[in-house]
Image 1 (tube, one colour):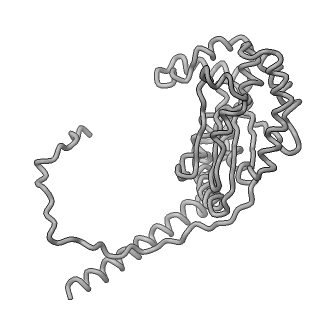
Image 2 (cartoon, rainbow, N blue to C red):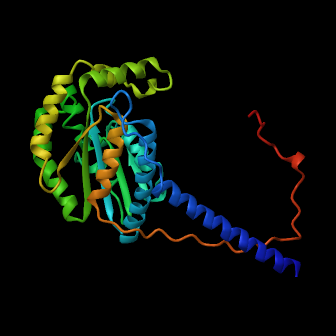
Image 3 (tube, one colour):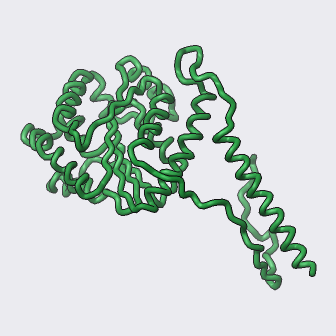
Amino acid sequence: MGKAMGNKKDKKKNKEQIMDSVAAESENISSMESVSKLNSKGKISSNFYLQELQKLQHQLVVWQYWIKHQGLRVVIIFEGRDAAGKGGIIKRITEPLNPRGLRVVALEKPSDRELTQWYFQRYVAHLPSAGEIVIFDRSWYNRAGVERVMGFCSDNEYEEFLRSCPEFERMLVRSGIYLIKYWISVNDEEQEARLRERAADPMKRWKLSPMDLKSWDKWVEYSKAKDMMMKYTDTKQCPWYDVNSDDKKKARLNVMHHLLSLIPYQDIIPPPFEFPPRNIQIDYVRPPKDEVNWVPEVY
């Protein structure tokens, strides 16, 4: 009798918790008070940014459920100058998503063995299976950017890339892959400010590589390389989407909103559900707490 009464109480409590959770979610996402969009400097205000970020991240979760349900294959490429904000955008996209259906690919420089392979070969190995999203934090476009500017490829290799890349991407699209390409733009003054901030901050200094320092005075060369890359690879089947990231928060919101618009989706998130009463083994005795190696509670 006591156990039955306990089960009823547990069910009632569980149901109340579910209702509270649904109400909180509705309040957070649909009923937020309006806040000022811009701050005194003319950039996205922190409160407005956080409000919109929560809404968009919720929709990204809905979006991922749909991609998995439909067995879609999605590739998202992020390219751009150093300190343009690629990492921050990728982080906000991936933050709420299920990592089991998502991979971020950021490859190191090719090994001696990979240098002998077909150029696209090591990237093909990371393409998605059904229901997966793969984000390339820099991609095969290294050849059109840093390799071209820094002399890491020959003229023949570069010209072959410009010829073959559009065909390679058309093959991916014909196979059913959604291929989405973002170029993150930043002006030279803003880029310099961000790089100097990284150099001064020990928590961000790891973001600076020797290649960043070598590329420091090659702004025009990178601009020319980007213009040539766009000329050959901004195609109807696989267009480039340019993102103004002088305001990093605005860029993050704009990319997330745009990304959600490219693949139609429906909300199929499972509804809240009740947990059954826990089946407790009454003959189990836990070991004494003083025999456990606890982490010291410093905080």
